[in-house]
Image (cartoon, rainbow, N blue to C red; front, top):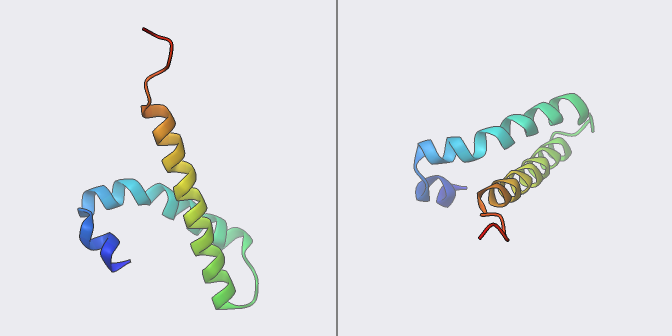
Length: 70
């Protein structure tokens, strides 16, 4: 986590992670009621990881030029 924060500017970090972080917090708050802080924290972190990967894949797909347009 320290390396992530250190290697990226605050503006880039916020722009890249804010949507996934907000979505993960919302999902965890609404649906994760495991009765254990550790389990809920792990669920939140796993959700953040999955949403971040999903958003990154969508961003890559949208930034690629369409094939066959030449």
